[in-house]
Every structure is written in structure tokens, then in C-alpha cells.
Length: 215
Image (cartoon, rainbow, N blue to C red):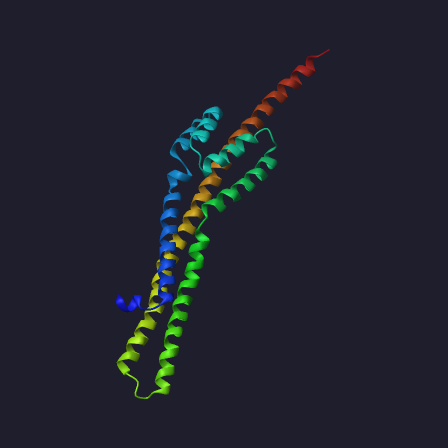
């Protein structure tokens, strides 16, 4: 451990990256819980079919699902194609919110091994220079310096690997949550517009019959 801490600024930079990655991982693990994205009360209100109750539940439980449902409900008087277009814009905003912080993990995955490698090379260069200028150099000192330099590469990989695993898991979770949100909104819109179409079809023949008996 002492040798690792003697590695200089590159080690401290890698430790800082590891703390940053851990912070983002904990925050995303909390924010991407299913109950925070698709609250159970909203699912129950959606199954009930009462628009006023559904709107109240959305206002009581702010979440990505609530904001998408409110977007659908606010634009129900619009034609379906325009409602879908407005929903797509809102959905992109919500997905961007779910992906918040993942770019930091992606950057750490790429930069940590490179930073460790640069630290290793930076530590080896003066050792090789001393060895070349003084053939009587202390071999034990050079070996210790080499090991300290190589610690930086190992540390860079140790930071990058779990960060890569977390980034992959969160990306997949965002994808699955996005599909669930899409299914919820699609079901809500289909139910409303099919009901509206059925009501229009029922009124149409009745109006035609009344027109037919008019003198």
C-alpha cells in the first residue's frame, strides 16, 4: 500500500476517478430503480382507466412515467399523429434524464487505463535513464521503482473494469425501462383513440338514420 501511495500524482488522479465512478454508480443505482421510474400507484391508476384519477396520481408521484402520461393526457384533443410526435419529443428528454451520468462512467472507462499506462511510462523513463548513465546503479532501487510504476497500470485497470460493468448494466436498464415506458404510453393512446373511433362510428349510423327519415 505504501508503494502504491508513493506513485505520485497519477495514482491520486486514478483514486479520484474511482471515487467519482463510485459516486455516479450509487446515484444511478438509486435513480434507476423501477419504482422511481414506473411507480406502482401510477400503474394501478392506469389500469383503472379513470383519466381524472390518472392525472391526479401523476401529479402526486412525479416521475418519468408520470411526465409522459401527462404529455399524452394534455394532448388528447389533438389528432393522434400530433400527439405521438409531441410524446416522442418528451420521451427523448426523459431518456436523456435516465442516461444522466452514464457519459461520466464511459469517459472513466476509456481514460483510466490510459492514465495508468502514462503513469507507468512516466515512472519508468527516469529509471532507465539512471540505469544507462550509471552501470553501478542499485538494482534493488530500480526494481522497486519499476514495481511502483507498474502499480499505476494495474490501478488504472482496476478502476476501469468495474466501471465498465456498471456502465453496461445501467445502459441495459435504461433500455428496458424505456421499452416499458413506451408500452405504457402506447397502451394509453390506443385505448383513448380506439374508444373515440368507436364512439364516432356509433354516432355516424344514428345520424344517417335520422337524416333518412327527415321529410
